[in-house]
Image (cartoon, rainbow, N blue to C red; front, side, top):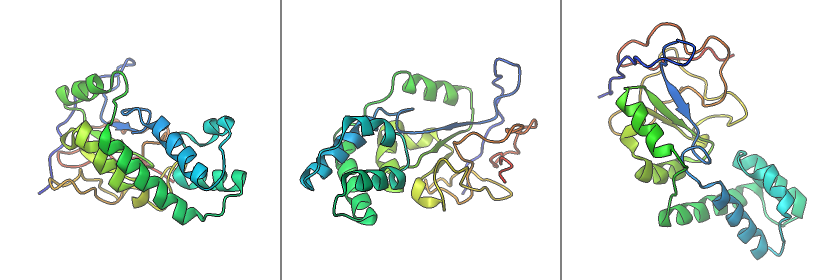
Amino acid sequence: MTSTVPAPVVHTADGHALQAVLLDMDGTLVDTEGFWWEIEAQIFHELGHRLDDAWRNVVVGGPMSRSASFLIEATGADIGLAELSVLLNERFEARIAEQVPLMPGAERLLSELARHNVPTALVSASHRRVIDQVLLTLGRDRFHLTVAGDEVPRTKPHPDPTPTPTCSPRAASGRTPRGAPSSRTPRPGWPPPRRPAAGSWPCPPWA
């Protein structure tokens, strides 16, 4: 059974109807970007390397593949990308199992979007297991759609995932359908001027 997306009536400052909102996770809804840096520093310390604080601005907020590759190259650590990625995800999952602090205003934002029946998607470069853990705090029912970085061929800054002709909301079971709109900046003209049909998600015209 697929949930129904109500037609929103909220308008933006320039008068256009607000049809949907796509939100990033780390650093937008939850204050967890610092967790990644702490875990990276810990792992590389165990490997016999000290991370330069200047590198934090390079890796924080970026996709794991890019950040991990940079740190391996910068330190010369004897570890492969796949192995490091597994370690990072495992440590991060353990960290957020203890606490997931919200960003200031995140609770109010999600509550207002729900109050105005605005379809909302969570789009993150984090892996599905991490997103599902964070959703225990944010509330899975607040999102019509969630998209994880390990569910698409390419993560940010690429405009994936590429949507299918009809982008349906996630099923009631909570699984995310393939072909979901991305949280990256879409082309001008999206969202479309017309409201989405009930039960469907508006699809941006990616290249």
